[in-house]
Image (cartoon, rainbow, N blue to C red; front, side):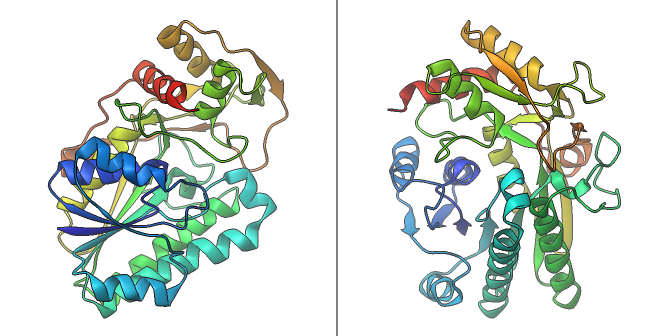
Length: 330
């Protein structure tokens, strides 16, 4: 199939492009490069030895998106493009609502116009709010603790409502947890612009000496050691989950958690990094961040049952691959 991947030069998008190409699909990437780099496209080609088509556009631009659909016979869309930092969303709510909702509506409209029936949406565990762990797909969505999570929940509702009146439109909503790690080649990984918002690139940058200390936001949560607990999942496992969801789309709306089903605290991840690399990362405790919750991990049994997908890589492998990628950066 010919798959349009929005945000395909980004962290999860680039790994999914590799997984799609390795599964025999063709890939068209649309990315505005606001939080990614054009060279990532070349690295995807290098890893897979396959050509891909790249458009530097913003997918909130209806005209630009329409031009891609008119020029290519697209069989499916995987939508990653969007703003994604929880803390920033609290500070810039209007920017997040505009970008994340409009991009989804523009793409859905183009799919209807050009009879594209497969749509995989990059959602998030943030839609569960401060629910009881483990999070299960059948849970009622709670008001989330940040605008980022709200945009994901709203996009899920928009896509679900479209399917109600357009049964030929098939949607998979993938609620994934905390992707970390990098491709085993070390060529692609998480390389945020500026100071990282996510934990793993912060850890690797401290280990490399780019940053002095890791800031641990809060040590008074009701968790094993007081630090926040998250379900860290290898980004390659996440990418493979997207391919499985795309290949199994057969009408209707399908919701899947992509996680390991295991929670790891911040300090446990720091310990796993030391095990993987023999580097002890210095850290300091800081105040909790607005919008963060204490604990978040998945019940991933539905994806195993319906897609035949399970996360295969453990936390030490995630740390090892992230460090390999960091060491290849200039």
